[in-house]
Structure formats: C-alpha cells, structure tokens
Length: 430
Image 1 (spheres, helix red, strand yellow):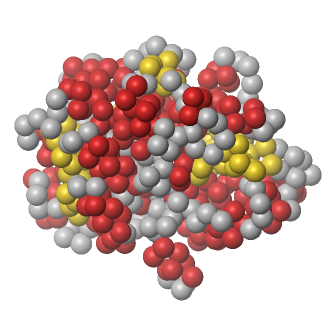
Image 2 (cartoon, helix red, strand yellow; image 1 turned 45 degrees about the vertical axis):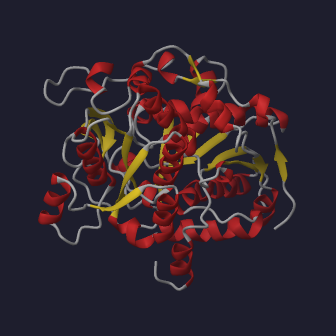
Image 3 (cartoon, helix red, strand yellow; image 1 turned 60 degrees about the vertical axis):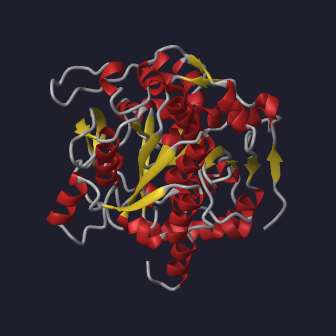
C-alpha cells in the first residue's frame, strides 16, 4: 500500500438537486399487470409513498433534494474521490485509475443515499411502518438506519443464502431496530408457497420482494421500499456522479471509462448518469461498463422484455433485461448482485448500446479484491470487486496497447462484514 491522493469537496458542494435522466432519455413505460396499460403514479400508491410515486414518473431535469435529507447527507457526504496510485503501480499500467469511495457512509455503502430519501417521503405522508427486501444486507442496513431516524418501524426480508452467510449484516439491521426474516419465510403466503415448492431453496431477491410487498399491502399505514431497479432509486443515487464530476475536474482529469458493479443498477446508475447527461447532449463520449456476476448474468445473457420485478408476479411489469422472474441464481457471496433483472433505465441504455456489460466470475473478483485491499488498504465488498475486476482488465489492456486512459469506478461498499467470503476464498472453498 502506498499513499494515495484524495479529492475532497466541502459540505456546501453536496448536490442540492437530483439529476433526472428521464428528462433526456425516453424509456418504455411500466405496465399494469392486470390491464397491460401504462401505469400512473396513482397505480403505485398502494405500494409506495406518494412522493416516490411522483418521482418515478417525473420528467423535469433536476428535482430538489429536501433540506432534511440533504442535512442528513452531511453526516457522510461528500464522499472522497481517490486516485488509486497503489493499484496503478501494482499493475504497472499507464492508465490512471480513480474510485468514488461510497464505503465511508455509516452503513458502509452507497445505499443510504436512497434510504434516507425514501424514509423521508414515507414519514412526510404519515406512514408508520416500512417493509423491504435485501440481498447481502447493504440495503437492509441502510433503510433500517433511515427508518429509525424518522421513527418508522422496519421489517426486512433477507434472502436466505445471505441470511446464513452474513450473520453480522442481520445484526446491524437488528441493532438499528429492524425485524429481520430469512426469505422465503413462513410469515407470508408467498413465502409459504416458495417453501412448499422447494424447502431447500437458497432464496432470491425476487422472492424476498414478493414477501415484502405482500406484507406491506396487508398491513395498515405500511409501505414498501426498495434499494434498486426503479427510476426514483436511480434518481437519488445521482448525488454520487454529480460529486464525482466536480472531483474529476479537481484532479484535472476526464474519465474515458466509467464502471460500476451491477445488481439492479443503483450504484452504477448513480455514478454514470450525471456523466451520461453530457453524452446525451452531444458534448462528449464515455465507455460505460456494467460489471455483473456470472452467477446472475441478466445483461450479458438475459433477454429484453417485460417481466415482473418479483417472483410471485406482484409488481408492475418492467421493460428489462431479464433471466426470468423465476430464475434462481447461484449462491454467490455477492448477494447484492443476485437479481434476475435490470432496471428500465439501465436496460434501455444497454438496448441502445449506450453502455455495455461484462460478467465476472467470483474467483477473479476475490483475486482483484485482495489485490485492491493490499494496494489501497480497503477491503471491498464482494459486489464491488466486480467493478474493480473490470477496472483492472481495462488498465491491463491499456498496458498491452501502450495507451493511457482514465478509468473511474464506484467502490459501492466495504467488505468488513463479508470476511467469511474472504475466508472461504483463502481456504479454497469458493
């Protein structure tokens, strides 16, 4: 590990507005699963807070961040941009590698950016309780903390394989006051059906979503929240890319390549969409790369069509690249990437060839995750290692070709609660 240079903004430079790509990009609509007609904000209100439903369909280019949410962002934002000189030296590459360090949030990931906003809009509406799903637990931890801040009850359905693999993620959620269920569970009709079909199922995010939605609509003064996929989640995450734009300018650099790991699209979209705004305006071009897992390759091997966001068919129909809402991914340690489909915005960008996707095997991920930890000092989350792996591939390609490019990726979270995964890697169990 060697000294690296960090580029820091002041709290006055935290974005005051979210960037809404739907002002600049046309996508196919969500469909009502019963009528197959385009949905409206009113159609979503039985599930989500009204303010979030409006944001899902909003078309204005910028949407104000509520003062109370922005004040809470000041606890950990702006996050650092880091020039990864240690990694560059280890790779002996002419490429310049930068990463946006979202692991510095109280919950260790970017997920808090949307969790605080979602909890705020629910509290504002008078909602008393929230439900959600979580894969590896990053989103569950974030919304549990946000719910506690706003005085809301929180119930989390955590995918069984991660519930078993990552007990300390469950402990974090419980510490913040959330009730955590292993999904599928016996607490919902959907969960009981999944267990009846396969008592040994490792669970999926699709199953957990079904349980959380059922729980929300069956209880008074309760709404559902989610950590990725839908447009309003991408909207909230654009604070990441807006900060990164300013910090890259401070560094005197313009990225040629922008990378993020990919589950449903929240951290990748949060970083790349503010840069995409300039590309859509014809001002510049970037190579946007989504890094997904070979265990759940919806972008590289899925098909583009309307599909449900959950396993029981309770959500709207979403235009997405999907492996099918009944797909059961391999029980990889990157639980946050075990989702069968991609959000509508990201799917449209892939369909239009504005971005590209690469799938990475978890052996390669832990190889580069370990290298990153030894050169930059941060143990990355298994999800984030996918982005690092693509950055390393691109940096080595620069070395082979004798070219210098500037690479920017999102370090979406740290891996200090994922050490069992690293232990399995070192012991040859992966």
